[in-house]
Amino acid sequence: MAEATALGAEIAKFDALAARWWDPNGPMKPLHRMNPVRIGWIAERLARAHGPQPLAGLRVLDVGCGAGLASEALARLGADVTGMDAAPEALQVARAHAEAGGLAIDYRLGGPEDLAEAGGYDAVISLEVIEHVAERGAFLAALARAARPGGKVFLSTLNRTPRSFVMAKLGAEYLLRLLPIGTHDWRMFVTPAELGAGLRGAGLRVADVAGMEMGLSGAWRITRDTGVNYLMMAEKSA
Image 1 (cartoon, rainbow, N blue to C red):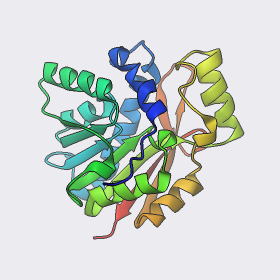
Image 2 (cartoon, rainbow, N blue to C red):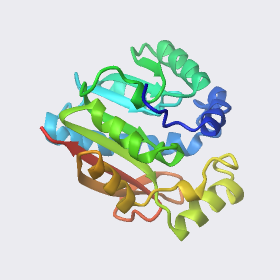
Image 3 (tube, rainbow, N blue to C red):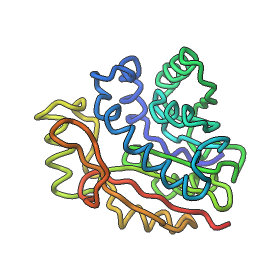
Image 4 (cartoon, helix red, strand yellow):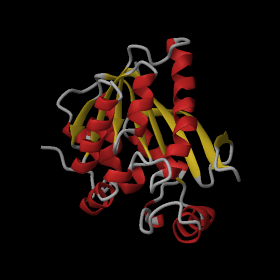
């Protein structure tokens, strides 16, 4: 059996938030506001490979799906979505919310290392997750195995910079209270260079990177500045 990449303390932390995950003004408010821009960035890049309806019929794996914010957005764009998470309470909320919305999403308990099939997904995404895992290299290798030849792997995370410590840790958790205190451990943030090296070590080619930033209105946008939040896309050889 593959070694688990999820940290028990992190699982418990997000399970405790499960009941309020879908509250747009609750503890996941930043993710609700961030979700459209990160899903839009992913869809735009898939459109380059698959046409104007980039997710229609594609098999997409959402690793660390939580209660399903990204999974539902992907399903509404036409993707055949499998959502995986190691937090059982969050998955219960995900299943109930998808059913209430008439969405057929295959939610599974566990991590990417638990997948029986390899190479079965056109796109693999893992958003705001890698800064919470125990074994980064093993996690990225499992994402790579899940992607089919020619498939895409997308991640979003937080850069480990002094600015991210001030903005994403002190500012978001302690000053503005946008996130529950203790949501992040700045020491586990991942620089783009580290993430790129890890993806290459997993046999993938880094193809694109972009920053994300929140404006004064609370709306998020894509930017060239990767100093705090950023997205990265990698490709698996065909």
